[in-house]
Image (cartoon, rainbow, N blue to C red; front, top):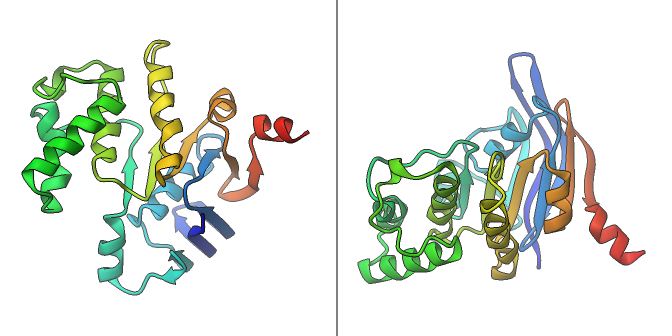
Length: 228
């Protein structure tokens, strides 16, 4: 697969914190593990990749083309989905939560139904369509948030601490969902601290330290061992 995103000479400042990235390249259909201590800049980088923040200087290119104006940003945002660490669900049914983004994109009703059914099957929540979203457990809420992202078929899926606090039963279900996505053409960026997860899901490690890249790209330990 080709290059999906390129960051060149990016500088973003907020208060005393500076994110400074000379170059970062993300390939299509790959898994990236964004790691670093609290305050290293992981969430800031995710928001830049989601086009929710603008760098003070530097250039982001998607599919080899520079972003030129607000119309480009709005168009590209439809191909990018960010799931926050504490996802917010609307006070409606699970189905209505998943249908929201599809309706904004004018997806026909019959196709909405198929996509929602497929997404709930992927996250092992078949039959949850009519459940009140605010009555779900923490693990179920995270899976619904992932399903809500999946129905949009994003080319770039950004996940901030996606499995933090999940119980032992929910974690393997969630990770199986994630492991299947690159094969469907989705590029994954997972921000977190779980080194065991980076080994289980493989992929490339991106290490941040106080706003700067330390390791990028570096294959996860499991992949290095496989080649040895």
